[in-house]
Image 1: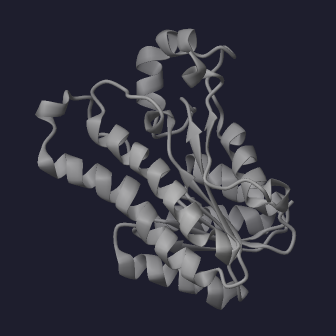
Image 2 (image 1 turned 60 degrees about the vertical axis):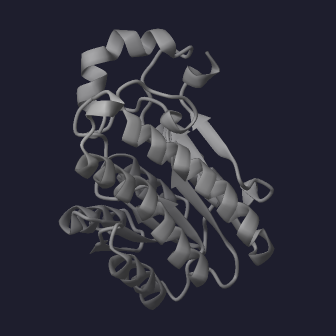
Length: 246
């Protein structure tokens, strides 16, 4: 589905980002894998190369515009073009807290990584997609519904969906499609503590009766980046086993 395309993945050292990078490579993409954990990004790139693909791993902090610009430039220098991007880097709240108890520093941390980071990536990726392209942003079910005691995270993920729609409208004439995915609870290092504390309660809210896997999300991202989704833009697609259909 991605033969001949060059893709960029942020947050590619582990979890959803790593699984998606591997799946993109299986579908023929050449990859620039970025993460604040540069060694982890390099390990993902090495796994792609070991499987016969082409990839480069680099360190990048999506809250720093200079890092984002260098990341996109690295994709262009390494592979000559940029066709797809998966803006997946993100963090969970440090702890569950009512809104009035969230420290301003914690609010800024979550917003900067989960929302401003997506804006910076979009800004530089769109400028690099001279022949059109496809971008997928990681939102969350927390971008479609409210989750208690997660004010900064919910605000950021709602913001990602709004930003996705604006980018889709602003750059449709440039041949660039922009969509978001909204994962439900997925077995990742980021979500593991929350899932283990509340597994039975979570499962009770999921009509399909299971926790999601990173592969579930990867498949959706690959499709959205492919030409098979050529008439899909400005959408926020839930990949949550029916959680938000309740």
